[in-house]
Length: 333
Image (cartoon, rainbow, N blue to C red; front, top):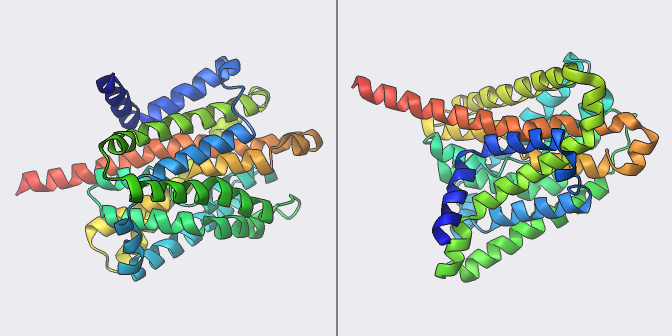
């Protein structure tokens, strides 16, 4: 039984993007399969994802924040300036509907993705730096995410910054802290290590469920607007994500980071916690009360859902390209 669980875990971790896309397709054609994933259920699932992140954190990971303050500070500043500003700029360039704009701004204002550490490892980056950046940006999220959304969102849309702050505390910081404490006190036990090893698979399942639930929510809008809506959002997400990688790498080059650190900051800046953005969008902008008054509000979750899948795909590809470059360079020697 244990071997089967490990095999399933490896499959889910290796094919994260395919699993997420597969669930999105199923949700579109068989909405009843994911109709139950909404509201508090989505928040609980995100909490489980963040708990899985916390279970991998150790005291040494926290110490990185103090051992490498300049690196982490620079990474956090890059995270919370580059992606929000790119998102805001793209909403103007593409002339997005206010609610579509809120969706991409939410993605830009969220912390680094929980899978970015794995991508940094695959890219042969600085994994310790990656963990430190993810930890720092996640801890800052309750303050930075609501504040930035409040500043950047269309003034015609009401932003409940205090509600977001509390939600991120409950659903993100709380579970991460619990996971960290469990790892600290029980991390040496064999049973705990087995559970810990399968946490990435739990994160993949959670992310796929959240995306599936969102697809069910926006399904009527997708039918109404057709391929044009998906193409538009894909173009915006592509530019947002790609510019994040390029400018993140540029920051590393500007401060003369070594190759491993430049790769890491590129991935950390480019890959966002779009799962968090999706839950926030559904809870604070596409909630039933707001949708009843403004039916178009449901559009805000579309960029978040597409980003969930797209960031996983692009991050894996970018990491693979970095590793391929190293292998090609080594073969020439």
